[in-house]
Amino acid sequence: MAEQREQFRSRLGFILAAAGSAVGIGNLVGFPVNAAKSGGAAFLLVYALFVVFICLPVMIAEMSLGRNTQRNPLGAYNAASDNNKMWRIGGWLAIITPFMIAVFYQVLTVWLLAYFIGAVTGNLEAMAQPDYFSTFINSNSVFLYLIVLTILIGIILNSGVQNGIERLAKILMPTLFVMLLTLVVFVFTLPNAGIGLQFYLVPDIGKITPSVISNALGQAFFSLSLGMGILITYGSYVSKRDSIAGGAKMVALVDTSVAFFAGLLILPAIFVFNPEINTEELSTSSVSLVFTFLPKIFLSLQTLVGVIGANLFASAFFLLVFFAALTSQVSILQVPISAFQDELGYSRLKSVLSLGGCAALLVVASTMSFGMSPFFTEFTAYGGAVKSLFDVIIDVFYDTILPLNGLIVCLFVVYRWRKTSFNQELSVGDDNFEGSFTQKYVNLSVGTFIPVVLLLVFINTVALKFFGFSFV
Ligand code: PHE
Image 1 (cartoon, rainbow, N blue to C red):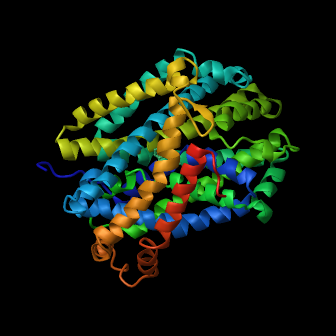
Image 2 (cartoon, protein in one colour):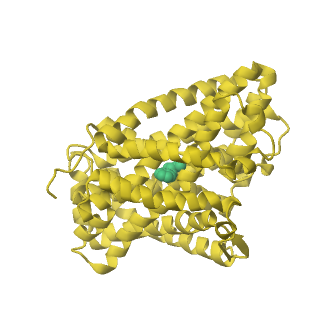
Image 3 (cartoon, helix red, strand yellow):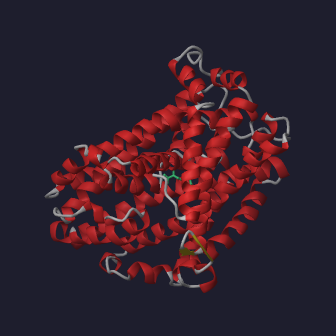
């Protein structure tokens, strides 16, 4: 490498950038929906246990591998295994997975941008109509938003780690926290919010079933951006003066807090809309909640806060989720970009343009897979259902390969890179690591039961998604 590797400017910058990656649609929407359906605080508790005891060690493993090797995931697997061919598969998966997840996430982010613009321009009433969403996603205006978003993301990524990603996170993350808290406080002032609050905070242990537990793990894993090569890549930009374990804990804390506060926003809002609501009816899909159900809730606020108030609230909400999605999106695209820079020696601009171009083609194809193009809409069939290209990307990369990548990284770090190197890296910039509880726990878990749990999740997902068979 001729040039010096980029680095985050400060510890805070790194934490905010990693938290920016972690905080996304998963926290703001996925978590509240799951909590609403699965026992409120009981779900939160299971989720938090998974964050601390399963996800945090995986996060630490990913970051330390990145910082030690100073590479993107592909280079990291190569460097830490002396170019072993078999382990290189792990590296490839950790490049291809984020690229494909970026494709599906881009589709959602485009819709969020459009809904934000829709609310700002006072279009909430139309957006709350039952077939608005399906008409909108099949209209040509989607492509307009797609172009705007692609250029915006391209500019941010081309500005680099410090001036692009870190600066964006430093501006957007605090803004996001303030907006989230303001919306929570506002919702609390509305009638019936208390019922929602009670519903959320009083645990219903009876709802905790094996499938809820497995959902909670999947949710936590996705929410912390694990298995996507992101934390390996971001780890490679962390200064040797900083503590990896300390940073990882902060990121997990921020991410979980945002999920918790999003619950404080969404659940009371649902009950303000309809105090009698049966939460079983809420779809598990974040997509239908954000784009069809929430606009209805926001519109109903008209009677309490007027038309302008309702549009303002909806605008603030969509902007909040859009910001969260944007910071996640830049983090995930930075993974293949750094691979192009390190491995092929491409300049940043060339990497951004070539990857952006490939991604854009796939995003267009996915955008057309909701009806515009019969070929992409009925792309294939398995597990007893016809699947669009968009569905296939979610099933294969998000549902199936993410836990597999987590499994591979754990095995790699402990059995190939070896515990001594792992521990040495974690002690760099962290005088208190040696002998700490974190060290003992991470050493115990990463090579033993965490991979076992992830393997079970992987097997269960493959059986369920592709063969229509459920173990839990
Ligand atoms: N952690 C993100 C979320 O909760 C997941 C994600 C990260 C998705 C990066 C895409 C890119 O939504």
